[in-house]
Amino acid sequence: MSDFDLNRHTHRLLLEEPFFAAISRRVSKKPVTTIPTAGVWADKETGKLQMLYNPSWMESLTDTERTGILMHEFYHLLFKHVTTRLPEEGMTKLWNVAADLAINGYIADKLPQDGCIPGVGHFEDYPSSMTAEWYYERLKQDQQQEKEDQGEGQGEDQGEDQGEGQGSGLPDTHDSHDGWGEVPDGMQDVVEERLREIIGEAVQECEQENKSYGSVPYDIKKQLRSSIRRTLDPEKVLRYFIKTSQASRKQSTVRRVNKRAPYLWPAKRVKRVANIAISIDQSGSVNDDMLKTFFSLLNKFAKLATFTVVPFDSTVCEDGVYVWRKGETKQWERVRYGGTDFDAPTKWVNERNFDGHIILTDMCAAKPVSSKCQRLWITTPHYARNPYFQTNERILAIGQD
Image (cartoon, rainbow, N blue to C red; front, side):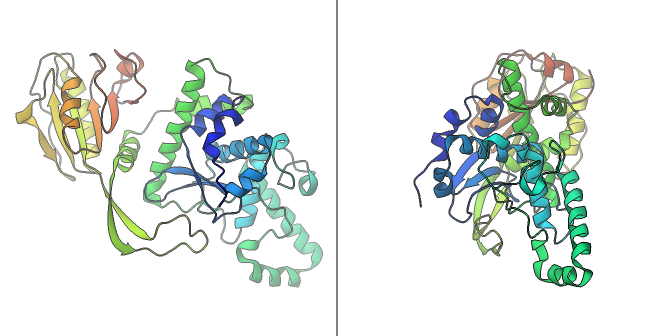
């Protein structure tokens, strides 16, 4: 295998594409020899997004083409092609081509030759900047017209043999789309939330640091900004937090290999159990209504998982720590009225074997010490907009102002 390391080149390749550079920093890249080109996919157990690439193929490209391939893969993430269900059984090739057509019109000057580009070659009369769904319907219509022109019998015979090869005669895509549409229903929200997080962080990075979006068209930039302003579903975010905080425990159970994409799934099953701590701010600045809102959220959270409740103000209320088991419901309660110190719960959690830490608070205290595990802040919309300190960690707003 070639020793070409794409990670060493991404900063230089995306120097003039700040938005895609921000996306790139949040997506791991792994060299493999089991695919001929490159591709992005989502792990169906963890929801982790990853770019796979064949180092020999990537090394053979020019710098401009490598930049184009990186942007192409990240556009697949922006357009959520990875999680979109395949429209119809046996139409995989058509959907793959349609997904590439939806992207390549924006970056045609950066791609290797002989790809699927609107307005070029086989797609000479196809317009640019349409959705994958639009291109898919157009490809189906063209295919049907071609079958009618050639005669019904021949088309049916070929359909039996081709299966997922529907769309023969179309150019090949530049990348691999194996694993798309295979995310199970229980993991769909997790992957979509991970995508929202990656895109949202990239948008905020460009906005806050006054960076250009590079070549991202205005209409897409507008959609990106709009998408991160939508109201979040706390339960989806919490489900995502659980999945991404999980500790891996290997079992010896052998898993069935995906024959179409054997590189996607490891040979052993991994059972994942998350040990989550939830610290509740019980200081005097958190009024009873806010505390009731926090407990209402925890009752919803308890439908998803078991977690440890850690009440605190300036110190942790050791006698008040307890395990809230999955399926239980509880009434709100107040056990403290003092000041606020986020170091107290953070250090308490850091000293124990937790995979994730959620803090329910009004954000009215100094920035705490670093957390050894993933940390999420949950507060009201007002305090989410006006936190006492700045942090790169996720802040989720719930309830009303």
